[in-house]
Length: 338
Image 1 (cartoon, rainbow, N blue to C red):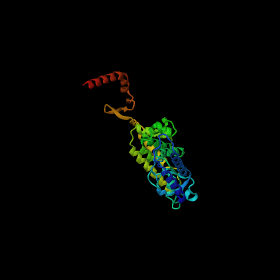
Image 2 (tube, one colour):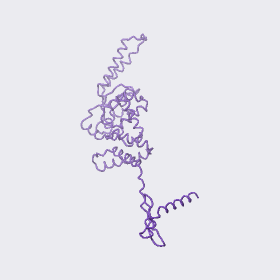
Image 3 (cartoon, rainbow, N blue to C red):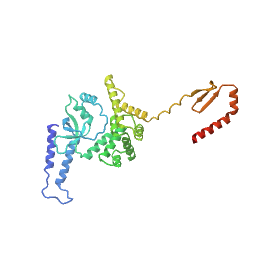
Image 4 (cartoon, rainbow, N blue to C red):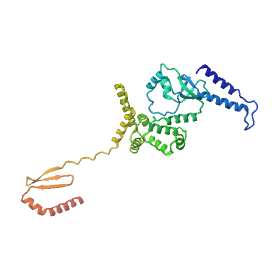
């Protein structure tokens, strides 16, 4: 921050602080001093909001609710800022009770890129006066306006807003300018998959609601172990990242996509119905008649069959087979009763 700008800020602060009224004004009365104070506060807001300040990155704290699962590599952004300058300022607000300290509203990647730079020492920022609620709304507005947030990032962000008490589902839906049913569905999917597993997988850009929902239902309805799936996701990410480094090229295989596919494959394999055991091959036992082989007894999937070698005995059995079977059945019944 330049000395001239600091002086303007100091003058505005001093003028605003000088307005302590001696006698209390009547209720509802608007005094010239009150009007002056409001005007001075508005003037300060205008100075903050319409001037781009150059701040020390170390003076800015980022305590915001996480909205991205995969903070993108900022090295390319750092190189671009070093080559062309920071074209888009970040937005910060004053830290309550701390002079020259700021809280980040949005612009995390730009701030991190400059923190990693050896050439750029100041970050260009707009300074605004926002309370916690308004700052979060500004962050939400900026986030939802970005098209690069994946479905699951938005779902988890909505879940966190409700979980951290920012509002109920209806209120969050209104803030995010979506329907309550879409918020309910997104949160339900994040719950079915499990927040820890979602974070292990990552943003998975290009994987939309239907596949996340299918994955979540399969995990939830089959009671699969999420810890095992988290391990699978982490291993897939590490392998993809290692491959990218080894190849020394920008891989089209996003590590988070590879993690999702690995988990999806593991879930599909876990719930795939086991194949029915193959029927046992037919068994065949030689049938001896008078000490010699006279036929074969075969057991198949359909039942039992007896084959007799052709001859007079076979011809006779053919005429007696019904009575023989009846006799055998009666003997079997008596045995069962005994």
